[in-house]
Image (cartoon, rainbow, N blue to C red; front, side, top):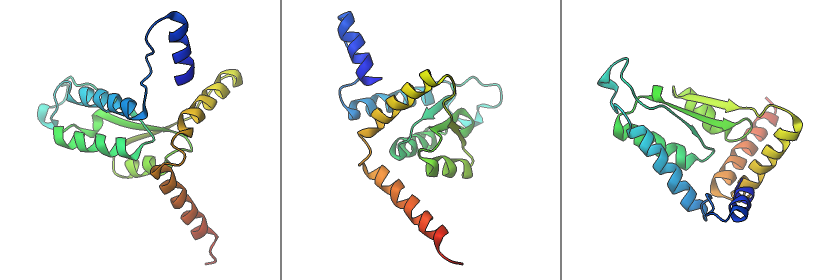
Length: 155
């Protein structure tokens, strides 16, 4: 949405709602997560029925997920309040690791009319193209390659 939202703001003569850099976006993302995790009772000892904000952290970034887990631990936030989600086929190693360790981990599948789903997937590709050469992507490629080789080896 980065390109289209900037263009819409320009046409309306208003400030763009989109951050200028990835780092600024990540900083805002983390601040929002921190604010939600800190909302309401932050301890597991507050008992059932205690009101507390819940959040679904939708991120393919290992750094953001690990950071969220660290903040949860610092604030003694119950894993019941936090879910993690990624697009099916992306960051599967993160989703499976979270699930294996007892966290709510979700995969989402875009569904709907082709004329709506394809533009969404194209936007996701554009957003992610900036990180295709990142350390996280290179790590995931290495893991996939190693697993492929393991499966192809004779018994």
